Image (cartoon, rainbow, N blue to C red):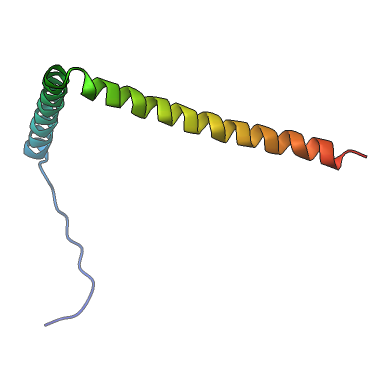
Length: 85
């Protein structure tokens, strides 16, 4: 067996792979829609508990971002007061 460098050219027809990827993306969209339906049904069965929980989660996220901004603001203004001569 001869040891050396060999150059191999491979040609790939990815049309089928692209089609399968598109089908997978379409199925994911259907699943997302079904999950919205599940949330709506759960909301109806629990008297609005699901949407209330989502709203609380969004509110907490907003509060955390606001506190981070406040921290940065206080940090930057306090350095102005303490560094001035």
